[in-house]
Length: 92
Image (cartoon, rainbow, N blue to C red):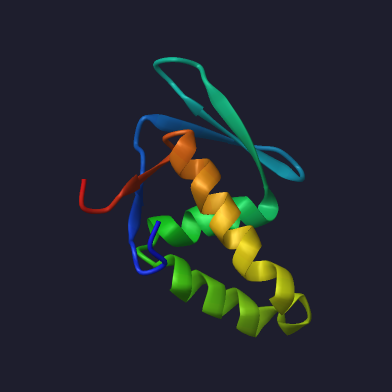
């Protein structure tokens, strides 16, 4: 995965929001993935056309005390969303 890659949200996934987590599930298969608030935010930012690098920069500016963890957390969230099919590469 390139950090300059853009993604789109897979329209086949529905979203259920609970207090501290988000459930994404494929309507056709019922397969789901739970996200914490941070991963949900990363997903939303990807859906708004931001690259991974742009998301990292925004979050590092907003939460400088967590700068050491943000890059790995964002990259892990994007990989998880891609692996579950909840995100698609924008050029697909």
